[in-house]
Image 1 (cartoon, rainbow, N blue to C red):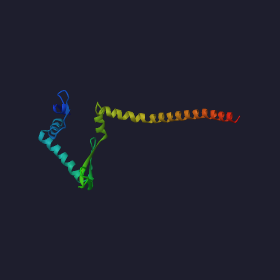
Image 2: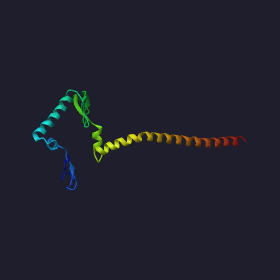
Image 3: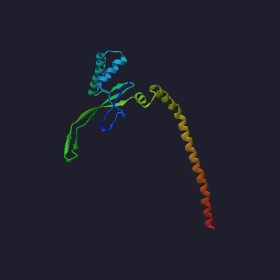
Image 4: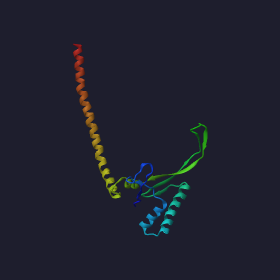
Length: 169
């Protein structure tokens, strides 16, 4: 899905600098219609149904989990007393509800890789295989460091003992 970009002369944005624009509902419906082969009315019905279902479930207090996409979690804030920053007077803030979204791991890896999901899956497998040897290497490095400290302290002890015996004579 490519959404394109717009240029603007506002705030120093000149035509050679493109500005990304958020996808609106109409563009999303067109994209769904194009990718599924549905006509625009059917695609609009599908998008509307999806949005209404997610809203209804989160309003009821249920999590909505979509595999490979993410989890919509309803959140609620209790009523509280705040302060007006200009006058310092107490202000009552009403209770409110909100929704949080936690993207799925597959969605995050797709966003953060250049090649898409195939490279993400390959990279995901490779670090798991390397995780065990890395721990062994870290453990062996710790052993080497502790052995060096022991050698250094062993060298220092005779020197201290020699200086003490020299002072006694």
